[in-house]
Length: 259
Image (tube, rainbow, N blue to C red):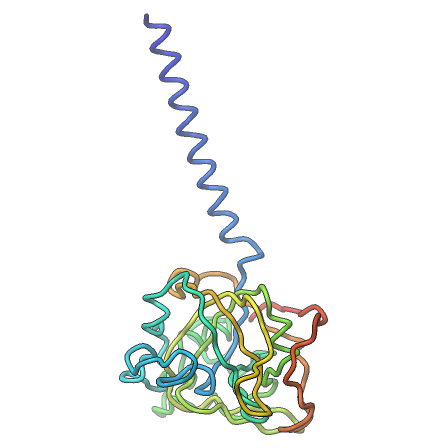
């Protein structure tokens, strides 16, 4: 009788250990390379109150609390983890999605960490928080490599997971050389997986693609590895190339550590 009980106890112990190992393996997969986050910037031409096709409310997008340096998750995204939605992405010359292809040294030196990306997301002094001169935006102007994403660049992000800082107004771009101004109020953070990029047929002649996304909880993934999209196609001007139709296939994206 004791032998049978011992056998049952041993079987139970191995069952528990197996269950724990299974959960551990799932956790390890969750933190694997496939779950790195591509850091992007999104402005009002893609996510804002009243924007089609979602008709977000002020509260949905944190419009009532928007400010320079806000890094709270947008309310709609926080409350709709796992939901699939479509986002419009602006027009040629007035894009809604932008890649940050490199991190300025000034961001690395700003603190509070030695990682410029994390300092931007914190945000650090001059990156949304006040510096010694009470200037919250001194390090956010004329940022090299802020690249507007048109159809081909968006297509290259299919299947990738994204963490984006959302701006309450336009991100302005200067060309030759390519630089962007990241000044202005923020609505906060969003995270999602890019499922599909397709041509938009219900907009204007210059409308950029529709992107289908699956919402992630940015609070849950904020600690994941961040990478920069280093090789998006670089527009020569605000109108060239007139890239509004996603290609059937695109060159492979190149991602580098966000330092």
